[in-house]
Image (cartoon, helix red, strand yellow):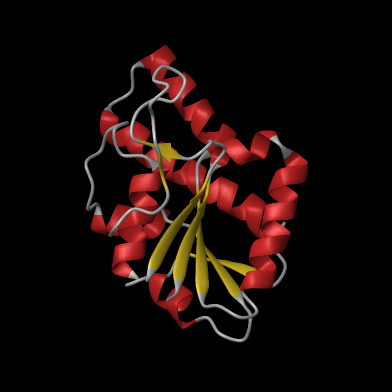
Length: 167
């Protein structure tokens, strides 16, 4: 597996950008072995709101947030040419012929339960876990941010953009 690409849920707020990104990723799959892991997007925001209102147990909100990733994954799969959804890491890693797996993480994460059940565990954390399990050479986080900096660039003028992080 050359790369796991995590498509951030924040990108759903900009449909033209998300659609263009999905088209681009679909084209990449013609020449590279990649897998997509979805973020949570507005679906996870709904879980956060339920948690705020009802103060749900962490184990419940963790599972609900992962199911939100599944929902966003179904949505982005419909936007990516030659993609298919799967719950199987093995099937994702075996995809060939320009087919692009969009891994819906709920079954894998519920079965293994490898990460802390809390809001500290994000869809980025789950994508990193999946990339490690898939032995992916790269993890790409497609997000609606200006990059990863040494400090908050809105507060610190000396913040430096980090081009690449070592694994």
